[in-house]
Image (cartoon, rainbow, N blue to C red; front, side, top):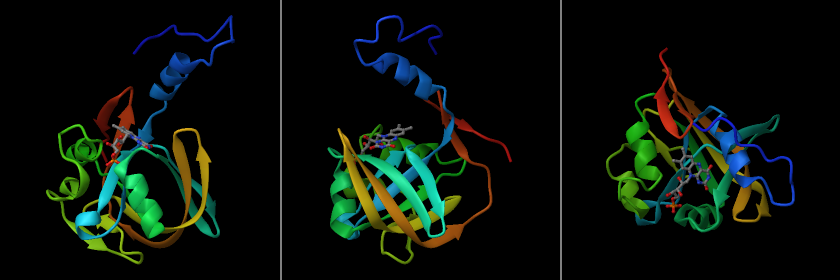
Length: 172
Ligand SMILES: Cc1cc2nc3c(=O)[nH]c(=O)nc-3n(C[C@H](O)[C@H](O)[C@H](O)COP(=O)(O)O)c2cc1C
């Protein structure tokens, strides 16, 4: 990690590198966002995930418009957020496109269930949060999808964490 990147004193350029440095310092859980059916299933690894409101239960995810999963989410009007357990680094790498798997082939090594919307729910995830799209906001390269939560499945265990571009297994 680099220590001393600063945006100041000249703020004429957007502080992109400093912002990247700041976000590398933000430890987060890791999710797999999934949508679609059969050969049309698509998914991506994501950390831009947040709860929005509890009543009604609402979550947001930020998804790059150029990714294949974006199209599947739009087409189905639904998605599932799968929160990874500590042993989920392999899933995270596959769904981030870092192992050569792409499209529906990303789903092949893993076991999946269907909850309320039909979006793929990863077996063994700490949580599957199954949503229909309630709202969307487009901003530059990404769409922020607000999902109304229709179904949740929970498991116990330790989480996978992402920090400083590395995956870290938390102990229970
Ligand atoms: C730790 C990590 C977090 C990521 N978070 C996001 C995210 O929140 N939103 C996003 O659009 N892409 C994110 N990505 C990148 C996508 O996982 C990656 O571009 C993926 O290949 C997109 O798949 P697709 O082209 O099949 O849609 C992340 C990647 C990693 C490794």
